[in-house]
Image (tube, rainbow, N blue to C red; front, side, top):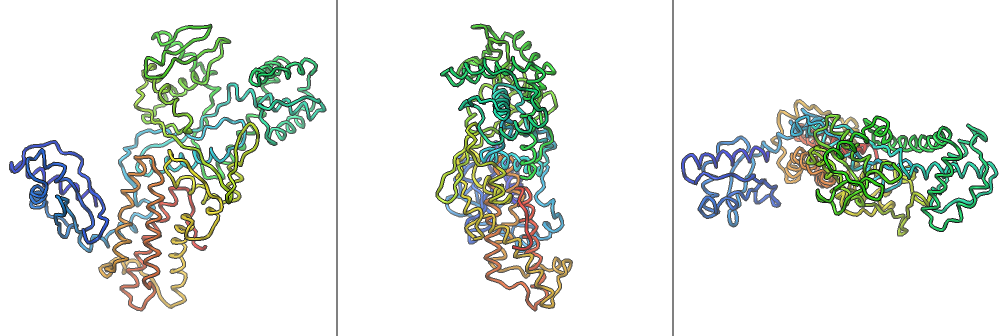
Length: 581
């Protein structure tokens, strides 16, 4: 309805210009807001105040002219001028009721939009290193990315979801040496274990699996291993252990140990995400960028275009010339590519695969990485404006007043699976996206588990279940519901609570578009809380199963429409709509 009112105002302004009542002006976006008080109408616009100066008239005078030349409308009952020049729009009564017909006709498609124009869009999210199970920080990115993708699909973007598997690099080497050291311990090799290796019990499980499958295949002499633990610098120590492991095992056997850790953890990640309702179209391997020479191709192109120079035996990218705070190493002095080199190649791959819109969802601690990635795209002539980076702040988990810690290397963390097992998938997903992604999130497990009106997901789901209970009670009271009859006469829905609920239901398509385009799932969360609140208020104030056939059918049609909107919204959030609670 806002769009229809925008069109009415735009047509009025065109008429005023053509009649030379106001000078020809460049029209700004016509803003239509929901009125906060029904006494001031259903919608309001400040367009007269925005244009008064360039139209060389006072706002109230311009508002009068705009109203005078508004085209006739099937939805507007009357208008009035308020304050310094606001134009208030009062809708015709049947406009409110007609939203029920729209909702019930469209069903699951209610709220669909074509604004995305089928633009090929890649949403890459989670992409946690496969060095351990997903923890609660990863869970927030997973829930946020999945809902952003759902919203974009709802408004007709052609969306593909991707997980970037960091299956190469130093962290994976640390994982491999961690598994190997635990494997040696299982085979009665009394050796220390470095503090900065991966400590979790899952490392022992992988090592045990390796031993059961390969027996003593990876046992080597350890007398030259012990001196490496004397190194005081923990990072130099772990690097020394990695080098020793590679030399002792050889390339083939090292790859077996490496892949055992990678594959077990990646399988766990995939299973946890699947149980969380998060699915990916593609699991993209970082290693493939080296294997198919995409990294080499990028380095060659940047070198030919004079974006790379050599210093201290390494190859550096001139990113400071493109807005970065300093230049970055792409090839280390040992000849190995950095993570950044792989990221350049990865974004080249995204563009070459035909994606017109590229959305990366990163943890907030990667904020400083945005400039250098965009700089690399510019240097590679890849249109950096195609890339949008969305940041997700950390989540802090509380059990009661106890703050729970998480650290992947120490092994002391709450996994996403453990959180979901305790709280449930619905509450976990919902609580993760209740706040703006850039805002810090305190996740209250006790509230998430509670069955009370203070728990927002319970409150919304209970509205859906309450509507279902009404229809279960209907046969017991000897009533039937005929939707065709109900839709033939909705004019009886005139009570304050009914009009309020109808107005809220009508906002759903606008909320979906706004939430999708702003990448803000929490807008949909707040909206569903409004729907639930309006319904519960209506439920407590009115009787639905009454003798009057016309009023009963009309009210039931309204609550069926409410049920459909709640179901549609929760579905986009990846949350169920229970019929019994």
